[in-house]
Image 1: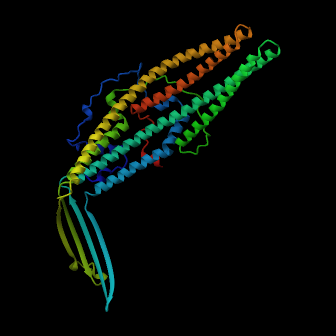
Image 2: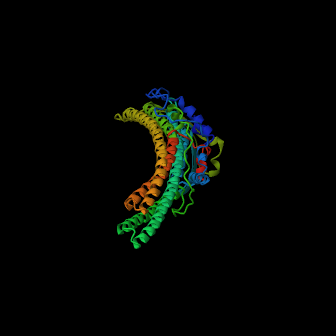
Length: 469
């Protein structure tokens, strides 16, 4: 089928489904693996408790700023635009491959003027048409290859869009978490500054030791150094976000006020679902079928080629006489060409295509089982992170109570100031761990959705045309 009929609705989802159905029937016997016969477990080995269906996944964060940033990234990101252009390139290559199934018509008009004693003028007109008969299906196999390449590139584009959403979300909440850690360390510095004022006052009254003053001053300097460090980190992460958005990295971007807490489960489905849901696996499968079609093309290159050529020509002294029907000449020629001796080149090309197909089969299997591994790992990690988070919440409350008690006992002369510093560090470390774990839960949930091939719902209607605008 010519490429123009396949691309009657350029870039539409219906077009992709139609093309996929057309190429499915063309799978040759050279393929060893079949997706419906791959050994896949019925259930994931690792499970999450209290699974329930969640729709509009990104909207569940209730973060309008994040939604707007993600949409801006999809529209302006430079790398995603490159992927969109790659889809267009593959589409044009497919059109070229389909054009080989149609006649090639060319026209040539020439006029000359010579002087050999007398001035001689002549005008000629040639109209030539060439058409290769696709008796062996060689040209169809070539077109099928480019159709599958185009479908594979579209799947790569979809995967790149999903990865961009996850990268944007991860960078966004990394910035929010860093902002919270910055404020936490500012609070730590202020708290230490207040303690220093109390201890220095007691030292002047002879109630505290000089060692306590030095320890507190050291703690204050450490806290201020961490404040400076987190300011620098926050600036860099903001620049990362602006680069994702295709904006100048001025580190001037408004962030959300808090980290959302993951309190809903994600429907993980079954292992077999990701074969259809994960775009990168779809791309790998289409590429495998394209390699199979390339093998068919390489095999049929060894067969004879049949072509027809027809021409209409005329040669006249006057230009105005060229279009006289009575003077037109025509010819019709049939041509058969077959390779006789190529020093084994065509046979080697076929064997190279066959080995490439075997290589692509192993690549697909490797990608498939790596996808299973990614899902299992993210599920296990989420269970672990949830347990750590709950434990750190309790640790934070206990550390806060211990710090207050230790400072009161220090003022009563019951404990050394090193005990206060140790309790204070435990309290702020526990608060820091809670923030970091909450951010890790968000990142892991996004990676789990990506590993399962989730479409993030609200972006499902965004096409490559929207990205290029």
